[in-house]
Length: 134
Image (cartoon, rainbow, N blue to C red; front, top):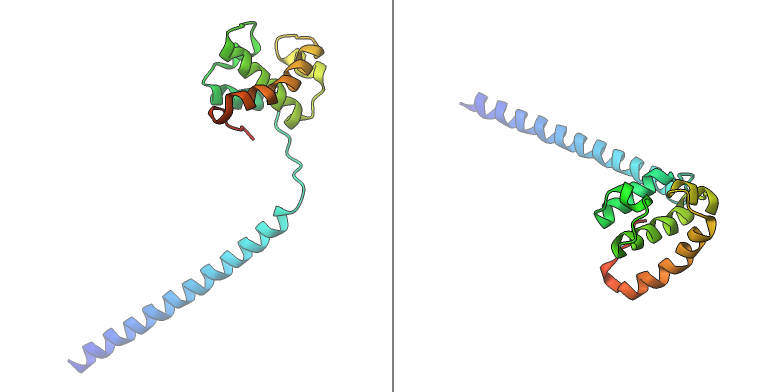
């Protein structure tokens, strides 16, 4: 009987040692991950989304089809989504106004400029009902 208790005690001790070792490894991994995240957190990002990704994100936010946004529709929601797309495309992609205009249904660069200028005030008017996509 004493042998069984002794085996159980040894098994429990091994289990405790194994758990302690695993926790030490987990802590070491967590520390390494934290250091890696800290190193990359303060580096400027080189990622630039494409016009297509921006369009898909805007379409998802406004629950519209991407073709509706770049199409010629003048419905209020579509026009507002188009303004949002042009604004965020200009801010996030680094593309020129003519490039954004060509992508958005061969529109003139002044149309894109108008959207970039008007979107912030329209968004302010709509208030909390519009969320940021960035």
